[in-house]
Image (tube, rainbow, N blue to C red; front, side, top):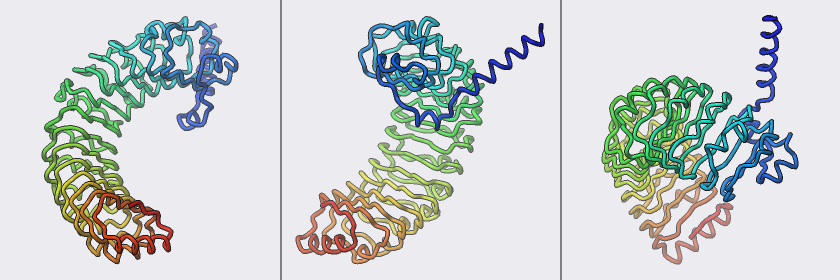
Length: 383
């Protein structure tokens, strides 16, 4: 009897795994956008998006959606979310992998979420959560946790046990105990992406340099006057966003980020860049807009793989001839500067596909010359 019970349980687990789709496969599934549409085809309904539909009551018929794996309920504050995730309703569905309950004014997470043993992604941003319950740590398969723009003060200590967690978004939670936070995330060896935008951070603890596995860090919209040099020792970083801070200088240690592909520094108070930026050989996107650069640093023109460069809203009066060295540049935004003419070298940039020039005091003759050149080269230009 015990043997057949074990065989039966193995069959159930194997069968469950067989029906689960990968995240990539889920992205290709049809999205059902109403209850009526889902109930008309319940067996094939894998992705259900009921976001912002002013739902006020739960329907018992949802337990017919046996294959549902993605559930969006964002923006339905009149819906009883605690009830929604009981076994009478969505809580009866065993294959749920992604849940979106953002923007619902929630003060606590629905306890029924703990039933979703296959849950990989939970989006609960733009609510009124002050704490995250310990039951979240029972969801061992969680890969993405998003609690942006809540009222969080602390994270449960057990969160370090989520060995699959690779993305954590805590943006817009300025009351967080960041000492506790960094102490814990230093133990999260699978963490690849960390979002801490709009957290009123004036400094970043040196312990962040322990996150050597981190590939993406977003610190936009904080109060960093001088991003610390140890921030640039995260050598696996592929994307770094320091937009909308108060930075006046960037450390020479920036050059240590040799795997960096995306660097965003817009809306700061930068007028120069370290020479070491030339070592970022993998950089493909650079945003320097909204600063006070009087000219483009030559070091930027040494980036061999740069494809997009945003220099809008600066104080540029000229561009260096060395811009011709940006052999792979496709998009160049020079809008709202003080450029009266462009260097002739720009005419010979073979990869350029789009250039934005509006808001510059270009003379009539210069505009006509540029129109002719760019028309002949089939480059889209915006004056």
